[in-house]
Image 1 (cartoon, rainbow, N blue to C red):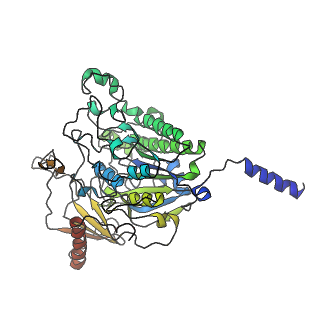
Image 2 (cartoon, one colour; image 1 turned 90 degrees about the vertical axis):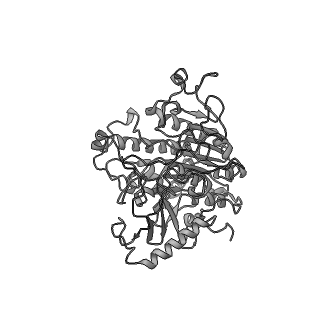
Image 3 (tube, rainbow, N blue to C red; image 1 turned 45 degrees about the vertical axis):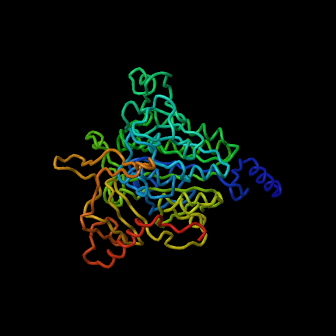
Length: 503
């Protein structure tokens, strides 16, 4: 065969392959999809070592982008992490000092605060939140959901919202979907918590992931011709474990594994929507988790769990101050900018995406925003950057126990694992359920459920030599304890831990 003819056929075949235009091709600012799993552990993806099931969609994203081995949620529970992602600020600087918001609590994010959503709005993006909110609604205690409810997601940076107002395990009256500011299928004139209303409003738990996935895909289809930001916090894999029946028997880790596989399926629906619309190459996709995993609580589920190491090699579980509470999977795919198949051991925190996205969008960050957020753009794109990127990182447990990580060293303030404090009867020792309020300004000032006080003891670990946090070196290295405690105190007393953007 004539070689010129072969070359011509080769060129024609390349022209017939759909070209995914990348950010590098056009210079356009990319679409961004931030997928936040709920209670998804470090060991819950096969690309992080899971063997009881496969997560091909997440694995593919990891192969095409950057996978982190030392990424951390700012808290070991969900509400605080969600606050921190959207504000770039540690949650303990807000009025919520530990645990999570309850269903009668007002919105946690100050509507005057610059948020991630507002950054994208300022840059001309369409912004959507689809999934689990759990950051409060309204301004008062005991908000009535019988009509329009605000402030909520639309007041803090999102053009649209569809999802679960609180958590997957909410009480029946809040076990609903909301669109923007109203409960879906709530008939006018009915109280949202009446039996008559709930006949139409209560969602089917086993269909929740599919319903949210359909909304996410519809959002992508609707906004394919303009820049968009989709914040997609899923309800998977928070208890109760309710995978759809289509995933039954697909894993060696029982119903827990099926819920993980369902999450991976939802990721795949997003990827396919991007590819179908020809915008995959111009979209940043982030996949991560709000905290560590919580193994099944029911005996039958635990038996089917088959000893799956949901938190990988790390000590502890969700809620804890030890690594399993906050060391999480993190994958970033950015075609044309992030080199495929990259593995990073840089210590990063989910607060860092606030300033990172601001840099990509070329949006200014005032001094009173993104206080604990570092810019990851040079790290992601392979450009020279300061190492370590962060001076230090603060960890926070469900009870409000603090830890600080700097380099290989981690100091925990207190001798416990940071879980719920218990009273003499073995029950969770809650001192108060409601936040305090400034009588002059009307602003909420503090909700401290447990009023935890440090016991004067410390745990000091070198994570390089002791990654499982087994050897407490505080007595052997008192100078390191003092150094890290001083840094922790300075971060707590000052308004920020990250450098001012531009300096």
